Each structure stands twice: as structure tokens, then as C-alpha cells.
Length: 487
Ligand SMILES: Cc1ncc(COP(=O)(O)O)c(C=O)c1O
Image 1 (tube, rainbow, N blue to C red):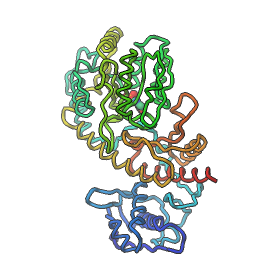
Image 2 (image 1 turned 30 degrees about the vertical axis):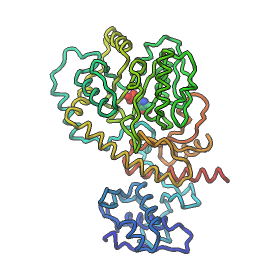
Image 3 (image 1 turned 90 degrees about the horizontal axis):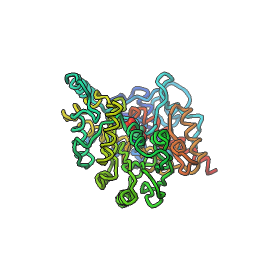
Image 4 (image 1 turned 90 degrees about the vertical axis):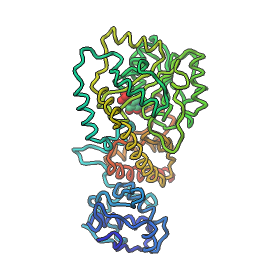
């Protein structure tokens, strides 16, 4: 049946929001087969006219289904059905074609009050595929072009075996990093300044080993706990560095530091970008007081509708260790990262690699270099940005109606939803887990007592379909929690 011919009857006396009724009717039509994958829907305007409702009603219904992942918009082409909701059930009042009877298992629109927790459909995948994971920092494997991937591995395999891999990394890799840093991060560097690493966490460990045992390193609180663990394992004292909505509070850093570890492009996990004036202040203090700054640029290639800010390493390469990784860009399975360190530290690291015969495995480096050489890396980055831009917009839309502030979404691949208390955070995290969604609360990123409450929502890892379901569920849980904590 053409999507335009769908019978949608609205019950204006029912007290259920009209947008909910429209979404229910469309969901039920897809579940019942009246709408098929690939069908194009009427525009929100045309449907609104046909149903005699305002366009806001049809737009809210479409937004909900987009967020749930049943629909997708294609620029200039319209809105399409992308998946059939399993077992969706029409609301009794919707007038849509009936499907087999069952409990009301649909995710509710945020305006659909009151929310009954017991009515939630488990959003997670089946027991064998595990929960849907919204943990920040996962790669978006969906956009990796498998033929480009195969081509890069073949190109890597075609290189003749090497007698002695270089401790600084393969020259082709270091050249590709230089190009990447210049084109995408605005950092001029020479291949001789680049050290290949096995990833950022490993690089933090390597730098930590050069700092005097017992010296103090400030690390953002909340922050990246694996970096904290790497530093403490090397006998360093990790102290909290305060963070607010401009990023690290440079003015609150204590004196006597050996180093500061930070995530200026997208503070992990809260999400603000370190403001330009604080960037200048940080490198100025580092230079004056003689401490190192570890700039973890883990998802720095990703930002939305905001201008780039200068890398700390570009502001003062004498005090900043710049750390990059392919873990978010491609996959941590490649085991490849890079470091650009001040000259003296670079020489020291290289000497100690030589002494211990440490050389990061070249296989992943060669794959990265091949992707870069063939233009596949740049194409991948474009695809990744497009995909994440869309995902982010959907997630923000789905969460907007909860009443909880959605923050830290100008960059990267995760955002934060603020919650009023630690107990609200724990309740939402636990309910999500019960429904098959792994949703990290901010408590886990604190070393001390949590002082910022909420959840972090990573949107790169799951498939689109999983993301739509999981985020609809999270939105519902947050709305319900906010209502119950008001009562
Ligand atoms: C803030 C931050 N930095 C670095 C990394 C990890 O990078 P790598 O896999 O290169 O160690 C992560 C991984 O989640 C991260 O969240």
C-alpha cells in the first residue's frame, strides 16, 4: 500500500497526544506490513494537511520514529522506512490496522504521560548478542568501507618483510600521521617528530615512565580512568583537576605539578571543549612552571557546527605531548596511535624504546598508511562525520523532551544528560541495564566522590537501529525518573 494511502484515524477525545497516535499508527502499519522497508512517507506537511493536524504533530511523530530507528531521512529525498518494528502493537485508539494482540510494548513519546515502567520493551538485543552498549568511546564500525579495508590490508601484506621494524614506527605511517595532523588537526609536524604508539593509553604509560616516581599529575575530574590507572601504576600521584563548562579550570591547578593530562577537544566524559583563553593559559602556566601537558585528542576529528580550536601542541610544542589514536576514527583492533612530543622527551622515549627493544607492531601502521595513501582515510572520515552528525541530531531530538539538560554534544561521539542527583543517575542506569542497555553513569568516571550527576550517551557504537531503540528507552527512563523525583 502506498504510504500516502495509509488509513490513520485520530481520536481527539482520547486524551492521548496526537503525535503519539500518529507515531503509533505508523509503527503499527510497519509492523503489520502495510508499510514496508524502503517505502517513502508523505512529507510532514502533507500528512498534517491530510490528517487535519498541525505540522508540529506530524514532525514530532516522525522524529520519534527516526530516533527509534524505524525511519531515516535522506537529504532532499524524503523520509523512508528503514526497519520494521518487531511486534509493535497499535494503540487501541489509533485506528491503524490491527496486529496480533499483546501488551502495549511501544516506547512512549516523551509527551506520553504517565509512563509505566513495567510497560517498557527490552531495548537490548537478544541474550546471545548482549546488551546495546551506549558507553562512550566506541568506534562506528558501520561506516568502515569493507572493500577499502581489505584493500589496505592487502597493500600492507604486499610490502616485503622487514628485517628490523623502527622503534619510532614505520616511515610510511609517520608520514601519513603528519598529513593527517596537518589536514585535519591543524598541527604542522615532521615525520621525525612522530612516534607510533599502540594507542593513547599505552602512550600515557610510556610518558608516565619518564616522570620522577612520586611526582604529581593533575587529571580531569571526572576524567579518563584508564589514564589515571596508567599513571598511578607508574608510581605517580594523580590529583583531581577541576572541570566546568569551559573545560579544565586552569586557574585551579595546584602548584608543583610534573604533568597535566587533559582532553581539550571534548572533555571526557562531560563533553565541553577547552576554551581558547584557557588553552593559552594552560600552555603559559606549563611553560612558566615547567610541567608537561598530555593532550589526549581521542576524538578531535569530530565536531559539529563549531569552529576548530587550536591544538595545545600547536600553541606550544615545547611543553605539550600530543596523543592521537585510530581507536575512535577506525577501530581499536588496529592497535595504532601516535605521539608528537617535545624534542627532549621524544629523544628520551626513543632511547628507552631502543634499550628495551620496544617497537610498536607495524601491521596496523601499514594498514593506516595504506588507507591514507589511497584517499580512503579521508573518505572514511567524511562518511564518519556525516553518520555521526545524523546520529547526534537524532539522539539530541529524542532526549530533548525529557526535561533533562543535554550537554557536551558539540564534538566527539558522545554527549551527556545531566541528572539532579546521584540516586537519579543510579536509578536510570539500573533500569537501562535491566532493559538491555548499557548506559554509563558519570560516577564511574570520578576518582573521588561524584560531584557531577548524569549519564553519558555514546552514539557511535551501536547500529542505527539499536541506537534508535536504546535512546528511546533511555529518554523514557529519564522522563520517568524526573517525574518520580518531583513527586
Ligand atoms: C578519553 C579517551 N582517551 C583515549 C582512549 C583510548 O584510546 P586507545 O584505544 O588509543 O588507548 C579512550 C578510549 O575509550 C578514551 O575514552
